[in-house]
Amino acid sequence: MHWLSFGGPGLIPKHPHAAARLAVKLGDGLKLSTASSTSGNGPEMRNKRLDVLRCIAVFSVMILHGNIWPFFGRIGWVGVDLFFVLSGFLISGLLFSEYKIRNSINFKRFFIRRGLKIYPAFYLFLFLTGVLSRIVFRTLSPATHYLHEVFFVQNYWHGVWDHTWTLAVEEHFYIFLPLLLLLLVRFSSNRQDPFRALPWTFVVVAVLCIAFRAASVYLGVPNYHTAYTASHDRMDSLFFGALLGYLYHFHPHILNDLLHSPRNRIFIAVCSAGLLSTICFFPRNGRFFSAFGYTWLYLGFGGVLLLSLYVKGILRGKIARCFQIAGTAAASVGMYSYSIYLWHGPAGAWFPGLVRRVLHVSQGPNERFLTYMVGSLAIGITMSKIIEYPILRLRDRIFPTQQGIAPTSDAAHPQPFLPAGVIENQEHGFENHN
Image (cartoon, rainbow, N blue to C red; front, side, top):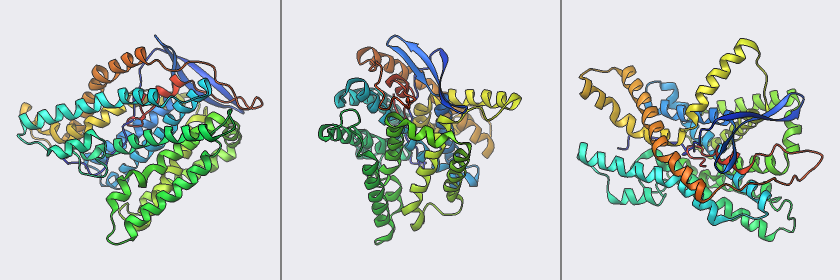
């Protein structure tokens, strides 16, 4: 069952609802667009561009694990890092939104909502794949491997499926971040913005993660796997997303001013492309990249995230229309990225063989790859619709999203605020979870 070398975070798809267009004008043609929708609990919104990013991330990982194009064997794994940055931004946004509405953070409520997003789909995935492995293939992973998965420590000890380690990293972040924010609230005298120490906290986390990764690969025998999968080595990627979330919610004028100038946007785009291109020149399992390269990646993807949020209207005419159609299709896939990500492992391991036996046809590499991709999308979207979304609707009836008008910290710079429901409907990364 361990057919995957790398994985990606469980990005969380959200409820697809009928949408109306909403935009916050940021001046000089800049707009932050979101798709708003309504449910029984009140208005909810999605940002279609973030769903597109999720689609790109999950397809990168799927193509990597399809083992058909050697180039993606070197770069496809970075979809994980994109998921991490998205998750940090969206999950922190839930907490920041709650604080701005209630002047407090309810850790218990946050974790219950998180759990109802992540656990049912994940534990059913473990159960069904375990049953199929036993009945169909007469094999079953050791019980300890299942325990590692159940308690989300599979990024430190061997689990059942190799791609689920990212869920463990995110789960640890879901515990660490709200506890940190609660401490900041407790000890800050600034009730309007008790998170002012967050940028410096990020610096400490970033430096520590680099030090931990360097220790993993420079001290003794290099341990590239630990540098790649351990939470204490990878938390900086998620925390950088949280830093962007903090600026977005509490100091939006900084981001607005930064992205107002076309020259600045071009500079950010060039820098992001340069940082992300390093994966083409440095091997992932190399000491230098393992220590410092993941920092370059989350900085680059942070730039991509900001450009996705703030830049609009570059293309015109038929070209814009074509990109709009493609973007809508990609966003539709991105909505279901969590379940697609979960099930792409079994789909790759089992579907090609199943098709060959049932249809009695031989398959070349291209046919096996196509079967794997179609199977991953089909089962992922199906499981999302019959398991993930029904539970989310039930969760939202029992623990509805916090609603209200958030106070703005700077009247001179009205912030592009997304209510809690907006962020929640965007979460996950492969899970940035609603």
